[in-house]
Image 1: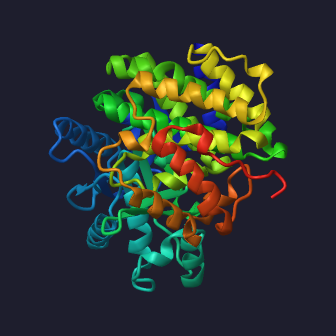
Image 2: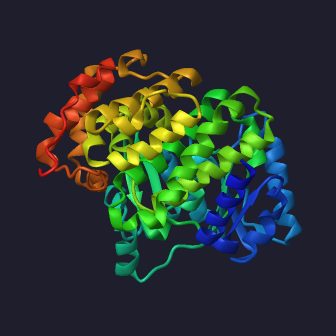
Length: 432
């Protein structure tokens, strides 16, 4: 694993250079990183009411003070899980009151996503007071261009191994009334600099650790599935390395939260997953997960759905499936003779290995196992897949899909995920 960690660090340095500080016991360097962008700082931070919150807040104040930085006001409480849009509005209003030169967002994926969206809304709300136009690809950059504005610098400080929100252009925001997530995808949202002290993840619960790790696997897996042949040299090693590092060490991180070696490996692996989604894009499982937000965590929803999309995509990605399957085979999750299988049969074998991995971790592997699941969730997911703001997920699929295919083909994938019956899945003709 040490060789894999070194290779991961090389990938991350090539990705972010000196704009990313990461590793074990590096939190004290937050001040020096932030000082590059200004001296008057607003801090949007998680941990209020949590047993680990006071220590984190004190460490944050100390790190900023060591670099002679001035807080523009009281620490702003971070957003709730899944980044409800109401919290985005609250944080934007508090940023407007404090008028900082630089913002520091300290939190997990939702905390950082919510702050990204709040910074954009703060900068543009006088011209664009409705939030819906911010969703989709490049909408924030378009608005900035129209108004001649720039976003203030944001330093993303990650606390949880999973989403890699501190490294990416994505912000997932939830409409609590409809139970639907929507997505901002924009280079303007990429934090100006980032920090991740992997020791901070020891306070993650077992369930949160599992959710985050499987979200990281999903990032790398879905990007890899969707990569065109010409781009494989650019990212194949990156994606496979992320999958293997997380799958190898996630069980140990769940078994012993204080296992620093496992925490570092999972942190590096999920960071590589973040790198992957800046090279390519996620697709089917992520798209469906946005409609399951009221019953499943994001990482858990992606992990549940990916085996079923694997069977659906299988005829188009045989070579990739053999390499992914080989990882699960090395780790003891399948004994199938992968080299002898092709097409759908190969997809089923790899999907079964993923299911075995999830079962050993204690994850649900069918929608019917999930409390509060109803057929309405499938209907919601199919409707959401037709939303133009989520069209990028359809385009990223290794098998081209348009709105007219969704009910028949994606519907069969979701129905299979409900029951666990892979035979329900209908494979599209490759020439379609």
